[in-house]
Length: 86
Image 1: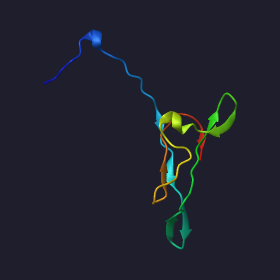
Image 2: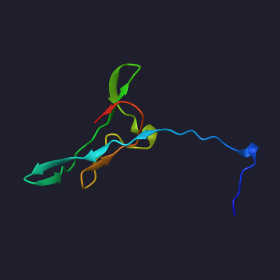
Image 3: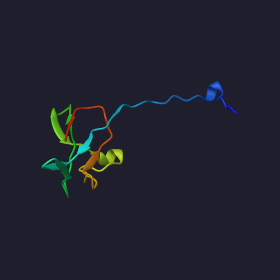
């Protein structure tokens, strides 16, 4: 069964591009990569109004910043378009 909305009930949705900066925090020991325990990863964004980097406000996007990587050393953020550094 297919339900089609009548024209008066059609809705527009806004699409937002998100960027997924992610990676691993580790140290090399010989040929192995070992996660760094208790590491902290902070993401900074370029505030174009002030032309300076600031700690990205993760709580505004239901995320933590800084993050503690998982047991594999993995971290990930979902952020709107912009200029960032980790």
